[in-house]
Amino acid sequence: MTPYSPVFLVCYRCRLERLPVQEYHILRASLICDGRSIPLLSRLVPSAKQNNSLIQKEFLDELHRCVNPKAKVILITDAGFQSAWFRHIKSLGWDFIGRIRGTVQFCLLHDDERWLKITDVRGKASPEYPGAGWLVRAEYARCSGHFYLHK
Image 1 (cartoon, one colour):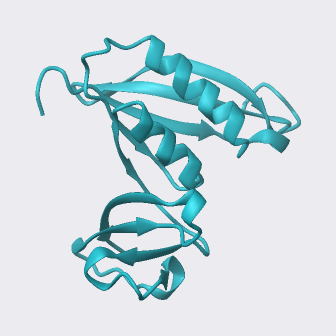
Image 2 (cartoon, one colour; image 1 turned 30 degrees about the vertical axis):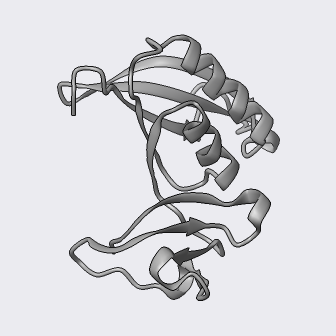
């Protein structure tokens, strides 16, 4: 990592302690620095729109405006974000590390005819690198990346 590679953690915070009803989530980007998480940008999102790609795109665009254009950002996300999210991160010139779950399919470049479901692949106790490939079978939604399996 270079001095120009800030690492951001982006996630949805599911609980708002002071609200009795869980009608909202907080979409938050934090800078990872010296073992700490420093909040940079937060947005209150209605629970019904938690996976709305337009809201997520606007959030990424706003975060992008806050960062030095020369910075090569690495964005870390937990599961729950879809391929449109990852494609937009790449369109900003950034890299990402994301956890994938559910019924999403992927294929590896060395075997691009064989599509696998995330649920069909078992990780081991130690991380395993099967290779680079494509996430999502539908061509309009595909996103390239490197895959690691881990339990």
